[in-house]
Length: 461
Image (tube, rainbow, N blue to C red; front, side, top):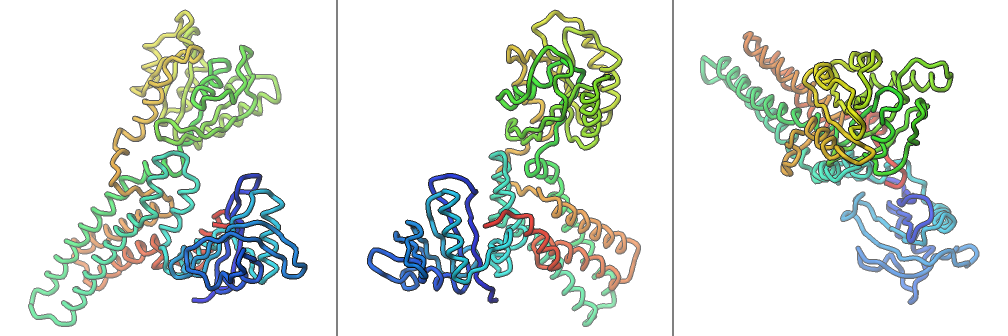
């Protein structure tokens, strides 16, 4: 399959020691030969593959030196895109890297679309669709655990399992066709149903195993949307600062200091939290604070985890009880803060309102109780199981949805077999499961979906 030659900056924009401009396509070596000048005048199109060369880029129109560079030459198919690839290492300034990019574009290359290098790797058979999606997961990983999940998917761990299941289904469908076309026994219908039932149960169990990892995998990939709520001045902003280990939020004794929702990403025992510090929820006449309170109520609806902060040195108020009511049925950790002050709160009533949920006492001023809180967050969602390094975690929402649909198709096939449905109708459900699993790896996928997925990638990847 032939495509035009593309180029893009593959490193973040800004000042740095080195920036990389990547070129991929049939004309990649021709383009670099036109603009490269080495110390011995050698042609880069004739050097060995996977070598790097020092020299200068020259504007062929003016003969002017554009940049001092190191150029990597990699010939297809042993490259990421399976095409000829050139990577130009230049100085990492805005002006220098853009001059190099413009010079390459002037020689006939086209500016790559977001994710187009990875898209070519997929279209050229270098990786499948689930591995391609793992590339972006790896870039966006916010914890070591999330990175390990992405690496496992990039290595094809999920793909191998999916392909094994698809092969099991395909072999079963083929055997059924043989039984139907060449019936050697009178009980061929019963034999075929028995074969279908055995394979359907096996495939269903394997899909279920993958889906059991999906909650943890999705958390590692996307982070837990964690909302800190409580009355004004109970220590919500201090809690944010303690978890982030920075003074991100303003902390004062004045109620209503936080006027809006403050968002930060934080790594808690390997669990990525998208941490939202909200304005204290209370009735107020201040227009700006009232808007902040309304936004606080809105983010509650989309939260995965609630950190409800109470004041150890205050009696429980109707506002506190109202907050417990607002988060009923959600994953909540109650934090009783300011234990360095005299106790006034009724802890028995707090535990009663928490309904068996976790209650942690802290003194954020004296940095006490934060370790216990972090352990409570990690244990609430992972229960220690995440440490199994050989497990395959499903973390992508698209994959989870497709696995759920495939499981349903298998269950429909089982129900049909139990009801004595004719074999050709059972085959429809089994074939549907095979097709859905193929959408995960890209073996069965629409071109519009491919375009949509790769458009979410960053430019130059």
